[in-house]
Length: 548
Image (cartoon, rainbow, N blue to C red):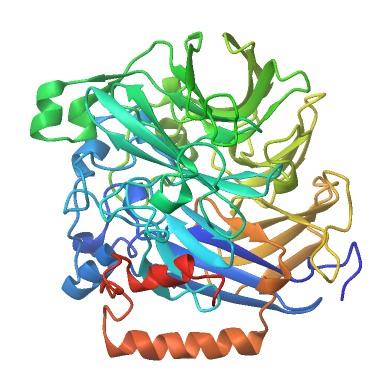
């Protein structure tokens, strides 16, 4: 048992997806041309007590990963032309607007890398990618159990979004899927309770797999990859995209089929299933254009004010006017000027919706920011603090390197920067907890910030732990991992006592997984149905979880 203020955070686990490039630049047949096409992998760290951390790192054994490992070369090349042809925001580094080929389903042009986000919810670990089914992993050993249809909620060829939005008001997790076409798109919003069941309130019934979800038709090709939730709404921003109908029909390559236009984007306010006022009803508002694109916004949080007439959401916004080139080979950039010409200017903005009719914008911080996060206990509620990775050159474009804490009320910030050859990954907020997993403090910033630091000289990585109330002082604890972990995208943190696995438990599970994987390259991709119900074996626990 640990008291409040003990380090590392007690009885907790971090699970963070990583996207390593392949492999070291020497074998071009195995290298990806588009950095977002790298195979997904997961780093997990479990704090067993005040002095020990158990770490493991493993690739997600997707179908595409296994196919390429068998052949010993790259088989999927759908994004190669996209990478070389467009030098603007669609190829922004490290998170591009064009995240996958537009060919429906999974094929040699559309590769489900499962590399974008990990979600630990209701004792289940999922990895997500924009446009395909999630993969389910064993939380202890990180072995891949296969693609998941979430207990029959999703169909085999359904696309699935790479964002999970947590609602701290109701302890629910929301996801979405987006079926795209040249003239219109259909977005489905899913809402799950703490047992990973579709909620029963609102539209439809649970028995027919319609409860807990709403469908929304959007105009044109909706390039959406992020969203936020408030108590009553889900918020999506659709960038203005012109579609070449003939090219979309013939090639479906996003660079040939789409053009990001310099005009107003659309904001969609979707009534959640818990909204008693017409669940699924959507209000579409035009966002005023101010010569900076509203495409590919990275949502930090959203909330409604007390009078419910005002909705506020904070995002990291990209301005691609500085982008002059696109790198098509690894390493993607070797100098600061190279990076500055291939990555957009990113800053923190606040959008305010008044009476569901007008939208205004305000810049909260003009520093170069990536990966903004908050204390998850305030997700969907009014927040004060946002943590993010920050460049070393303040407002100028630079690689994410340090950690910053921004006060959204007075626009002040605390910044810590490592040495010039060290780079921090996404920050994650970890609350101070008691031995039973309950939060030990009610203060929004009374916790820890965790980040993985990569040392460019030694090529090794370390875990950094910060006092969330005092970022400027620097890390109060550092754990050397002994290996180099490539920078990744979005991770998650859980403080549930159920995730406090011992080193012995993790080691036993890892050894068993290694043996099972050694018996067959696809042992964990069983596709058999169960009693004619149309459920994959890896979905049985999701349907009968209470029995197990």
